[in-house]
Length: 266
Image 1 (cartoon, rainbow, N blue to C red):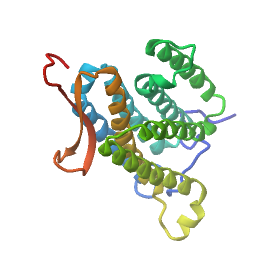
Image 2 (image 1 turned 30 degrees about the vertical axis):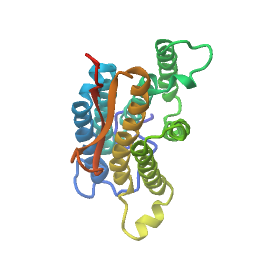
Image 3 (image 1 turned 180 degrees about the vertical axis):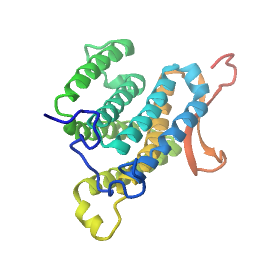
Image 4 (image 1 turned 90 degrees about the horizontal axis):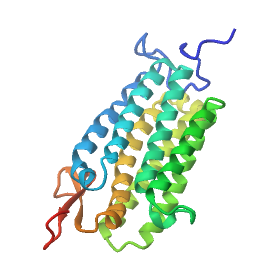
């Protein structure tokens, strides 16, 4: 009889970190604890982006709520290494990507048969539902598919940056790419070079992936929000600021907006 999908170690994937080394209740201690970064970055970005969300759409907050959900499900997954935890983790990632697409994907790249962002959002929703159902068939493939989507995001990002004249945004996009490269390198190294890392007793790259991908999402989100705001709320002045030091370029970036001169609302 096959094990329950809720059973510990029912997942087909076991990451490089040794199991139950630091706690009898937590399978992968550092992979679990590192997910705290999701629980910190998500609420902070909701707070920082609230003025932008109020003027653009409150669905912006939905992205970061799902981002927090990813962290919670990932904690459960790495604590138990259960099939159900893996499924919840990957489905939540799928939905946050789809919601981000529906909000920030530039309209200039919409297929010809789509005439509005509402129609595009409906198409993305249908694809998300179908992909969710398919994830129950072969969940192990999901992680590779979800990571491959980032290549399309980077492709669109590069095309937008080539048209951009704002040097701050260009620099932010370059930093975003570097962070993504470090993050995906950690993920791939932990997955495929585990024997090497075990030999040197350093099996924590997947926990580094959690931290770096959080930073990557914050940076990329700010870049896309800037491009989106140029089209959707052109009456606003847009400025990239950093938390906690607004006067520097070090920290977590976010989009700050203010009304232009001679404009009553923004």
